[in-house]
Amino acid sequence: MYETYWRLRQKPFENAADPRFYYPGESHQAALLKLRYAVENRRGAALLCGPSGAGKTMLTTMLRGALDESFAPFVHVVFPQMPAAELLAYLADELDGDGLASDAADVHTSVRRIERFLAANAEKGRHAVVAIDEAHLLEGPEAFEALRLLLNFEPGGSPAMTLLLVGQPSLLPTINRMPQWEERLSVKCLLRPFNQPETAGYVDHRLRVAGAAHSLVEPDAVPTLQELTHGIARRINRLCDLALLVGYAEEQPSLGAGHFEAVSRELVAVAPD
Image (tube, rainbow, N blue to C red; front, side, top):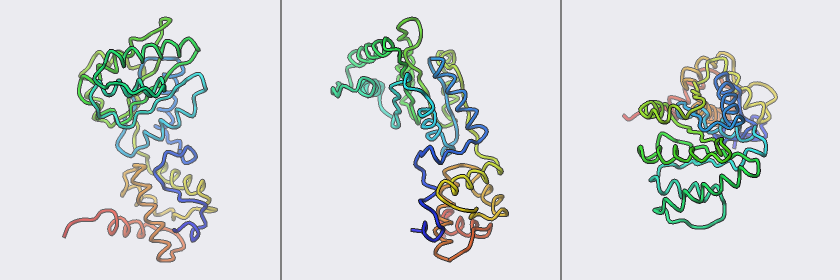
């Protein structure tokens, strides 16, 4: 709607995990490096935590793109809130890809399918990666234990897959209460929100990728943007997208601090009367 007015090729603040829009913040780059270490050295498990909207799914996408073809398949589970038996059946379907419908209650069949697939995959010189997004929603100790036991499959004496747990910070105390998981985790990564210079860089990067010839955000607006969003990528996206829309409607030449404050007050932070 507003792209032509701002001379953009596309909307710059969509929440889709498009690698072109990835911004290498300090904690994001450190986490990506550690996760690559865990996978490329064929460790059993790793942990990625961060606040909602901080960029965990984008980072998982970047990890997938950084790995070579020997790290396959890469299974990304985005809805893990299911009983352990159903989760195992789902993983079996995703890993072997044979299209067979499994009885979710038949744990034995699911485990055997996973074991056979991982052994055959390892024989081909490949290493599977399973990323469990929203892992803080896993249904109780049974689901965690089912996943952990999959790490016992070590054809040739080394793990046949890397299990990546991705979730909000509430996942950390859950893991801390399970020492059997603690010893399995090769690395732990914690994403922090962007600081003010990173927020400025993030906004400029997205605008440039979308085709902006110059910055559309006035420099004095950055502290306000940081205060309103706390450096959370998804909040920045929402506020900037709405600000571009309102700026287009008002025929603004650029976006200043007062503009972001007004948009946040009127369109984002809606309060009851």
